[in-house]
Length: 66
Image (tube, rainbow, N blue to C red):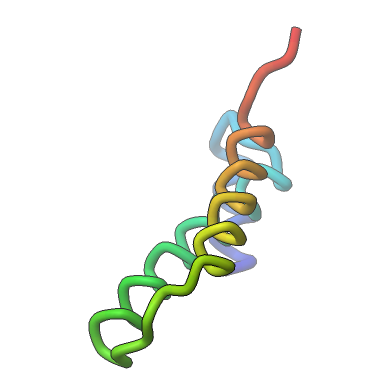
């Protein structure tokens, strides 16, 4: 993932930190679907809270505070 972030950093309006946080958010979303559908894991309340807090971090990474 590092080369993709490096290329995205040079060619886009995103900072390196934003690209890394976006990568983690997307990876988490894909893993949740995989673990529920294929591994038959159940989603517990603390997983939902943790997921919400990570998505909140993604929101704040991309929010423009002027």
